[in-house]
Length: 273
Length: 270
Image (cartoon, rainbow over all chains, first blue to last red; front, side):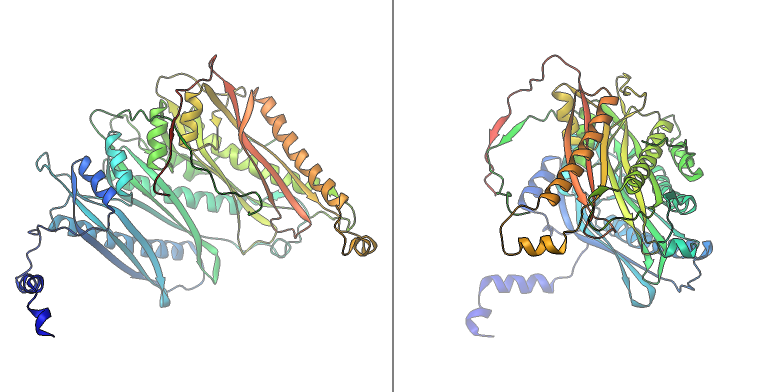
């Protein structure tokens, strides 16, 4: 290291800061991946960022390729376990940081080789500026800072991410059907009911989680579905994810938006589609 | 087109819809609306009741096509119509269980699975809503209104003095004739209109639009907004195309449709 660089005052301070022991929950600086606009929107409703927090969970499962009902349940439970660990990990972290919640949380479910499933949750922890009024359970939400701002202004607050999982396996179909040789229009009622019920079960499990949180509703529900894996295309997994919300004591607050007319021109699309 | 048999909803659906009651008489709502849309639906005087859905896995039959003849494939049209109606009817039945006045943000999807050639799953998903003031918003057929408009468009529509009546759609699966070898050679290297292609696509589009308009007339709508015309070949190859026209039938509910003049803005962060 050149002598000129080591004598710079900023470096001395930084090295001193690194040498001093780290005390969780005692920081004065915050770290966040929010934009300046989002920061201001948070402060406007009385929240400030604390730190970037994360949680992770894993689960694994050995498929027997029978797609029996129990096997579907096992896989469904493995997914739910991974998600649950990640979520309780991030909530624990929030407790430690004395934060009230995490916003703009990334929620990722990844399947590695050998049927290892990992779930990661990562986002910016926020804290109410004026402390006091009850220790509510910290919330974790995938809603962005602007959505969080709007929700609070509209008279609601998020109570947490809620998730439901279900897996369904199918009966094999007749040869004519699978070759696409059946000549007539017909509804396949067994398959319809199987997928329909699986979707409803994922929703129901998500709703039960929301009820467990004492929430009034769930917004931004996403129902995702995909085959369990490339070999098991007649087994489908459904995941319902949403943000549970509480209605405040005053109920819905009017936002009274006004009409705007943008004078920006749209890009020309006549020949480019 | 066809009579849709009254379908029983699966047990799991009924159980979910009935179990959403929270102790204390309130009920848990669910919705796939974004925060923006959710708040605007509330702002418009409606409470979301729950996410409702319907689906149908449908085996689409075979119909022989003549290589050189442009024609509608009735059997396929029928299949695309019936399967969507089945999904929508079930979604409406779910909304009925919740005692809804209408369904907003309806999405119609078609999924294909690897296990089924010529088999597709048709899905309808939306958010059932109820008017806060207890007024009835059911349409001429006595059903909850349906609309594929977003929460933003729904709010704007009501502000402008219109009420949505129902999602209206028309479809037409059409086989466009291949050109004859002689015709192809005759037109080679020349810039020329291909009248049989033009005519076929024109005809198919018109049929889809007309059917959509017929549905709107049945609902006694004043007009249709947000019409989308979708052309898709699904699994049939390039010469067989489905033309789907879809929009929301609306009815006027006030004498004038004047809104406060919008504030002109120019965004600076483009």
